[in-house]
Amino acid sequence: MVMAHMDGASSRGRPVVGLEQTAARAFGAVPPPVLVLLGIVSLQVGAAFAKQMFAVAGSSGVVALRLLFAAAVLLVVWRPSLRMDRRTLAVVVGYGLVLAGMNMSIYQAFERIPLGVAVTIEFLGPLAVALFGSRRKLDVLWALLAGAGVLLLSRADGGLDWVGVGFALLAAALWASYILVSAKLGSQTSGGSGLALGMAVGALVAVPFGVADAGSVLLDPAVLAVGLLVALMSSVVPYTLELEALRRIPPRVFGVLMSLEPAVAALAGLVVLGEALGAWQWVAIGCVVVASVGATRTVGTQN
Image (cartoon, rainbow, N blue to C red):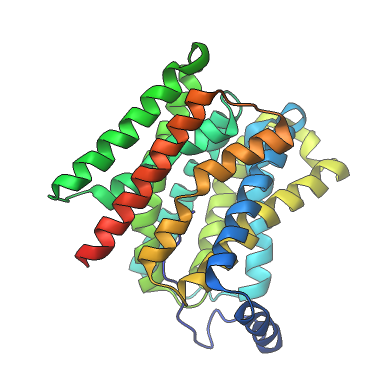
């Protein structure tokens, strides 16, 4: 997940000093590329665990638990102030709405198509942001390569559920919006306060859908425990690792590393869920990964 540069620090929205210093020392011992890769693995394995819960709590129920627990953890850690001007409030609310929509859409896609396929299609969002407005001929190649990858995914092994593909494309559009809103959130808030408040807004949006989908099942202790695990693996851990990595490596390098996400998602689907993909589907995922790496490096050379 591409995060904004929310790395300012102030007395407002700052976690307990001892906790922050301990975390800083721990993160400082780990190379930034390793932090990014650990975040990607955590996110996608968490998504695989979440998919296993769909039969019990429904996709909307799982999203609700993920965002609710993630918001609770982040609010406790960052203790953000609720005092903000109207512009900041609008950005926080917008971030939360996009975050909730993105998660609900991709989980609906997970319910219908393999994890690796859904994430690969969703990855068109950040790829489009990277290519938008570019006039370099080479970037046309990356766009065509990504399009060819998605075409292969849709036609390989008998095709895909088009409703699932539609939800994945919606998630891609929302991911592109998320990147843009995240940049504004980072400039309007300090530390992780904006992330915590935005996550809380997202939880408020998702919970009614989750309750309608799963009802009292969401109160089952076993479901709550797995929901907490998914929240930690898919939200708290990867977002935290990404923020720390972005403090220490250029955005271009970060983008290249994040391009591995579709492949990691496919591996998580295979190992955790037994979702074996065909040879052409792996080729398709490779096309999107290469297109993303190429686009990110091209944009980086322009800046």
